[in-house]
Amino acid sequence: MTDVPAHPFPYPFAEGKTALVVIDMQRDFIEHGGFGESLGNDVDRLAAIVPTVVDLLTLFREKGWPIVHTRECHLPDLSDCPPAKRDRGNPSLRIGEEGPMGRLLVRGSPGADFVPACAANPGEIVIDKPGKGMFWNTPVHQMLQQRGITHLVFAGVTTEVCVQTSMREANDRGFVCLLIEDATESYFAEFKAAAIRMITAQGAIVGWSTPFATFANAVR
Ligand code: TIU
Image (cartoon, rainbow, N blue to C red; front, side, top):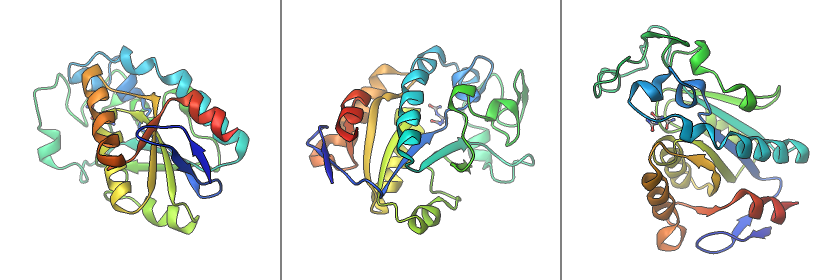
């Protein structure tokens, strides 16, 4: 175990038992013309974390540690997209409709794929998930258990939606979770700050948080 300085107290990093989880670094959330922008959001806020996510990916790749990438997306017939999700709100385009990057959040559409800098390498796990959380209706729990993973380091978008949901799901399944603060972002600065506070409050009730540089210095 390596103690990583973190909030609310040092995170017990377990080499050999830890995977990086990069949540939904997809064009549909980060680039103009995608799902995120269709909901009325300023997507440029999210693009700003791409270099730090790349640094985190590079660190795990240099070490040969496991990496999981997730994509929020649906089958082309939308049979895994509940009407309650598709019909929510008043977006300019709905899930499954044709946009400038293809059908929004549909598996195989250019927009549903990763931004190029955060593409998965061969051998890394890619999980297509129909929900906000990474465990709902996916094989990821079994895949992590098969590899002896007990600790997860989180990055990606958006902090209070898919990242927080996935961390809560992971925490309930017994994983020891750390969020890299500058490798996650929200469309709302105040929601990112609040999510990090919620995750780390009450003695790390959901998990720990720390900046990338602090994590990298500790594990290198
Ligand atoms: N809208 C929003 O903030 N997020 C999502 O819809 N999905 C993810 O967080 N990936």
